Image (cartoon, rainbow, N blue to C red):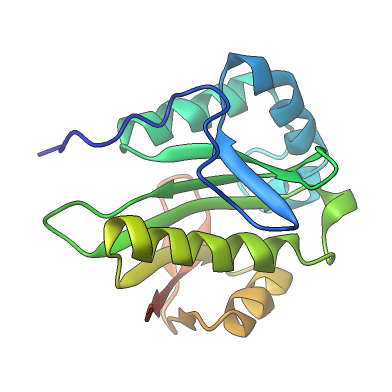
Length: 179
């Protein structure tokens, strides 16, 4: 059963921000910039089933997020540059667990602290607005840099990989949150 929740499709509605970045839901006005982030992330995409970015891929990701009652967002830095994409599903009233579906930082902006800043801000946002106590996600077993990142961020990585229908193999990851 799908629960109705806050509509995240408002134009220029900042969800959360820090000194370094801001996030807001993607709309039609952001599509070309989002596609550019995907192009700049083809090294990341090459780890999965489809290695070449396309507008169809972006639209499919957005539709999947909408279907799951998620929030598909852009990440902008303080200079206004689009640096990444964030997709998450806030918890429902029946659960205190939220899901992080996608965190993708474009190659030119990696190792500059944006990933860490957005994860910390997302955790605070989910605690404050949704009373989230745990975040779950997955990381591909062949994405060594991401595995190191998530461990550094305090996420527990399962020992047993899982095969996904798209052919990727992932570890489940999770973090118990505290205020």
